[in-house]
View 1 (cartoon, rainbow, N blue to C red):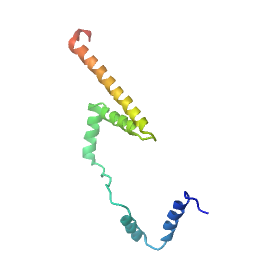
View 2 (view 1 turned 60 degrees about the vertical axis):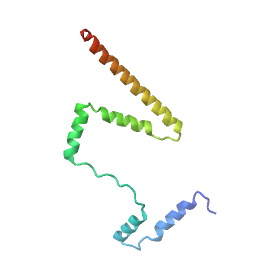
View 3 (view 1 turned 135 degrees about the horizontal axis):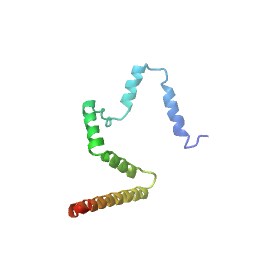
View 4 (view 1 turned 90 degrees about the vertical axis):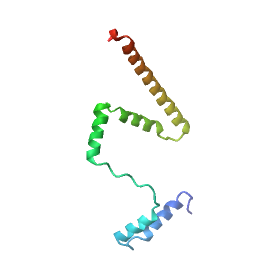
Length: 118
């Protein structure tokens, strides 16, 4: 007796084994390409004459801050089973951003209005 959970596994393995050895590698690659749905292809990597200056600008001129923001956004966007978790992560992230901005503005305003404190 087949259980409902085991049936798709058995059918999939049967379909894989059904054509085993029937086609050459080239033929099976074209068949597989025809079976896969068309979709966006991953972008090719950028050439080194672009990546080297961009990495220099990001790492040295901007102190790698854009990379940390991207890492924080990716962490806040991770789905781990509940939408409430994502909302909580985003609220915490936005709270940290607001706190960083407030601290930065406080330092800038102190240096601008009271330069003798430096």
